[in-house]
Image 1 (cartoon, rainbow, N blue to C red):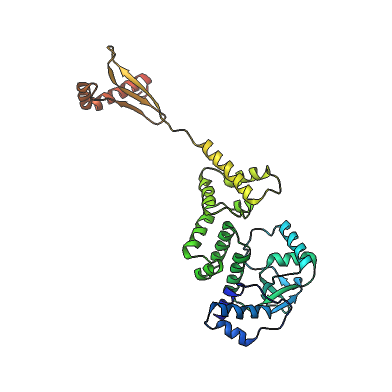
Image 2 (image 1 turned 120 degrees about the vertical axis):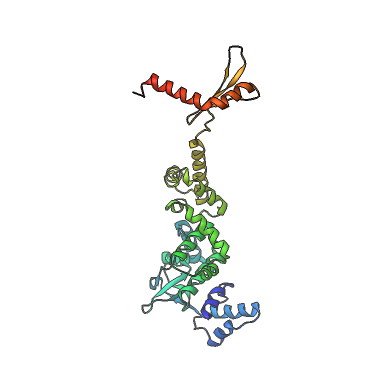
Length: 327
């Protein structure tokens, strides 16, 4: 319970001092578990964080765990690396001990770790002994607070967590969603064909309704192959939201173009030698319909009602004799 509480709250405030590397005080850890004011809890956790930062060589940290982002974009990593080179690492990552001596597994901070690997030197890290559930909650909440993952990234994260057997409460805590919110994300990702999201990317700003609208086209359009064609024609540096819009526009247009026009058939009016309307004859690809309006010729309508079956059989026999189908 203590590890879970710590994982859910430890990143509410940034650390005040990254220079200290002493182990956290047992007294402070106990204080963090006790009920009390929100302000007091935050103060305790901030002090724990500040006093538990270590310098760790990047090659001692393994990049494992669940994928919560679609891509670690090279351009953003380069920008972050340059910022850290100039100003230092302002926010630590979080790791937990691995099963091997002097090795760690990253909980959150994958972008910062990738950036520091580019420029060299140790990475500032908070070391926490967390179980899988608490580690997942920490990873998800830190990303929600700092990185604002897109709707589709959250959806894929939820799908992976569920397939790995994480309990609903853990998944909800990791992303700060209600049970219905988790369900809404999962419904959309389940409707999308495999590989489509990887082609488009995280598409920040594209929400549930838009992804749902694209998924709804899957029974009319081959979304993956259409996306490949559209994206191949775009510049390589096209932002992910623009890729989504281009794919959606092309697939919507194709769905409309492929839609078959309504089969209305051809209707002709049948008149007698005096020019009076006898009835109408409608022919389409599926049927032939004869319609007699009783108001136009009530007596004929009454007679036909009584003799229609015999007349139809007589017409069928005439066709069979003329076509030779009866021989």
